[in-house]
Image (cartoon, rainbow, N blue to C red; front, side):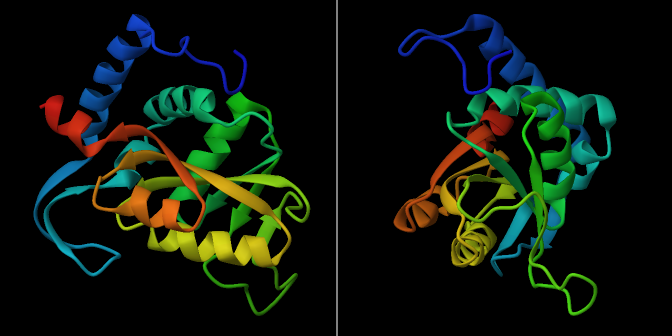
Length: 191
């Protein structure tokens, strides 16, 4: 597999379309919960995708990572997984992409190395943010700003699920293009 490759522009790759529908169905089946949930953004939702359910399934996580690999922009030098859910995704993705990985904390720890980003060096490198679910995009924006202060060049992010609640627009306002493997609409359609 070539990282960043995919179907020809304008032409659907029907195997990928079928795989996307299948993956959406699987993700929805293992991780969709109903009830009342408070999201990181503070909003409440009656439907929640428990990302830890698909992240804890090694076979499904590997399938998701394999599909995410084709969304990696050309020229990416480091994959940066965000604490906590992005860590499992970035680790699986790195296996397919063969790229070094950084693990990004919400805050630098106060002991040991006292680093915000552990693992691969990010300064002066083209870094791709890897997240599990994007709702408002708030944590991606915060972590991107932190990584940019460390000298990373960040202009793209990938996620497994885009809940389509303004995250992509919030990221675009910060100069970050979001590429999602699955969207809320695709998960709804897979019902």
